[in-house]
Length: 418
Ligand SMILES: Cc1cc2nc3c(=O)[nH]c(=O)nc-3n(C[C@H](O)[C@H](O)[C@H](O)COP(=O)(O)OP(=O)(O)OC[C@H]3O[C@@H](n4cnc5c(N)ncnc54)[C@H](O)[C@@H]3O)c2cc1C
Picture 1 (tube, rainbow, N blue to C red):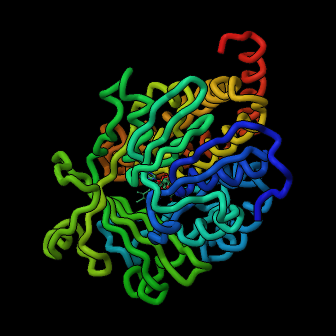
Picture 2 (tube, helix red, strand yellow; picture 1 turned 45 degrees about the horizontal axis):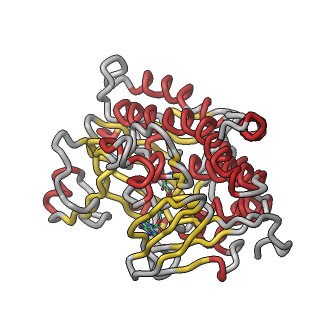
């Protein structure tokens, strides 16, 4: 369970949303002894299953948020199943060869600074929620609107209840209500996420099914690259299950009102010759531009700030980096008048990096589907690009981010500019 020390601060933070972002922040605030209440629209923690791959930056963020978090993650995470491939992120294969193809020698994307780990999202959420006292979480609370008052925020939920907080951190995902409260007035065009021009079919299959589909290519992280389409696969659940995501480039706008669309089997088979996935298209939306991460006493974290395409396997990692930096900054706040200094320092540190992840991820998606005008369909050039592409994300100095953020916070307080 979380910290048992009494809260050191007199202000109260409200977190909206219990995804990886909201839970990461909650663990961080517990560690920093900052009081909070977390409100989640759903009736329980999400059990939606999908695989999540985390890079070394995400693992370091976990460790810096709370060592127990990283140690619990080590207990549930899975690497490549082939021995001595811990530094290989993915092997590249052409999609045209067929998923079980024997004729191509896979090209590794690897770095000594990378350790392959993935987890079932449900297992990740389970370890995170095990660190958070249940009495700090309120379910069935969907935010309807916010009102910024003098030094407070009033939060009204769809059930009619209104609560007040010293500040709100909206971790309510790419479609959440908080983004509108932060950007709606100054940047109304940037509130809604945009369609990235691709959708996915996704599935988690038992390993014995994966072997039927992929033959000897099951077990390790693999990227199958093709013209206008690609597959990503990796092991989760200690090798008992295999995560498969099939990406399809789409040149039409996404017009369906929801971000998932059930199609008939023939439509799916026309996209991919796969029988293992439900014929459910998941649209991939992102926030390519977010001009600011806070407005007054309301701040964005995770996908609400920087929803990204998943091509660099970095969205969840960016949630954890946000959680690390913001929890430490909020831990410095002595009274409510310091909160905006924490938000400004967080915005300055986190926004340039997170938005660059969003931008480069979209670029990577084009490379995997042979849409890049220079690299084209030369898989060796794709591999060359990918072997350099992730290093700035993985090897980033989070200690330096924290130190810069802390200095900036003190500077802002001392200057009296906030
Ligand atoms: C196909 C795919 C594959 C991916 N693979 C990877 C990967 O391998 N590695 C990686 O790092 N990232 C990956 N990602 C990205 C990663 O999953 C997300 O970045 C991350 O889960 C976002 O977490 P979040 O907490 O910000 O938002 P969410 O998970 O969307 O959580 C938001 C929460 O807020 C709640 N909520 C919403 N609105 C309200 C409201 N009005 N009031 C109250 N509560 C509300 C929701 O119910 C939800 O619980 C992938 C994404 C996709 C789509």
